[in-house]
Image (cartoon, rainbow, N blue to C red):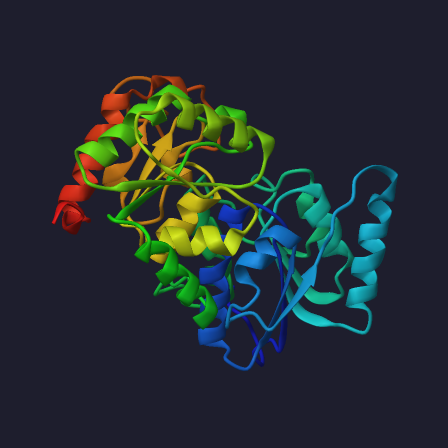
Length: 351
């Protein structure tokens, strides 16, 4: 299908959580604005990803959904309904395939509620929509989001994320990197999803090589979760390098650190996709999720350390299946990709 009649004036995007998924929403919003410059886009989103995109030029309004647990969860939906009062959308795009997002889609007043096909929608999310994109096999997550544009007759190209920084953030960034004596390599050493994490001992050795052989300053970045803090402390204790510890709860600071770094090393987590959107070369460590579905989109695939493959050269399909593959990643595999990254993308690091 393509959109029939006048362009939609009011569009609502439902994508609540997950930093990486929020990054994948941005090319959709940018393409909608290119096609229908007079449309008004509202995004239903949770607080943490909201800090990443709050000033994005393609988004006109946000409804911040503060999810509560247990019996108080009903208050979150009451607040949403209050925020939606007197609103009416021409089009809702339901990009998140979970029950809580489906319920929000159901509560959002709209003429067209567009979601995934029955096979790819989870938690019966398809019940909350009245139109669905055609059924297709698994693809990269970004491509799956772009399918919504194709269904609406909107050209998804060029794929543009459009993340940027304020003048104040640029000043902070300049000050931070001026204090480093060498180019930086941002390193994400942990995520809150244990199965995605590599070994602290492995990171410790990689940091030493980054510093001693490649002339890079390792900068540890990540969130404030206890798991990330514990892993970072273990890495710092075990390494002979002198990394800068920049973990914290300031997502915008993490973003401008990644933006200013010569290289990023990361498992499959939000900062990896932020780095891709900002154009920072990224060595991606994959073993739990399929890099063909969740890797950096259309770039730096040559830098993926593929522990997802059960043996070198395995020809596996694009699936949403999980594997216990992070333990297959060796230090030498990561260092090989770091050297390749410096050779192809960050030659100035050793200048």
